[in-house]
Image (tube, rainbow, N blue to C red; front, side):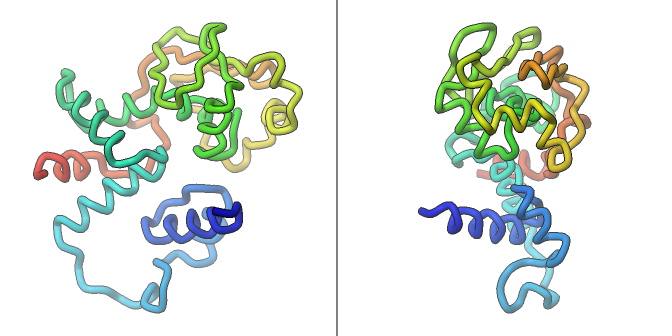
Length: 209
């Protein structure tokens, strides 16, 4: 699939879910805040409870760029943990390495963050990690490896080039952007995580399956 086709697909999915998955999709949503297709602007009949829950699950999944199986695995872990399942779910997702690379401002989109990890540009506590799903622990430090720091995407990131398109840095991450270094200082709290989804509806969706 070409880059242009992937971009169109992300924009279309963003409009369908009502959440911007890329900076370009955010601009489209400002101009066209309705679903794609010829009936996008027209009023539709009220969605069923199932459809509402399904859409929230899809919104959450899309924002982290996960396959269904991956999200289900994390949900099952969240359900076994103490506390509220929905809050646990978002906290666990947010501790993924690719999610924190994005939050730190080292990448512009979730896809770019995942690519940076897979292409072996990211270190955790000085050790190379190439699994986007790697669970970062509080106190661990993420760093772009020295040989990669001079690559243009990371030079842009170090100069704060993504600041305008990314959410405000959450309190659970400390970042030295000029050094391309970030530390997860504590577990995230759901209220701080810049993800648009009603996690209780996601829990209800999986509980009914």
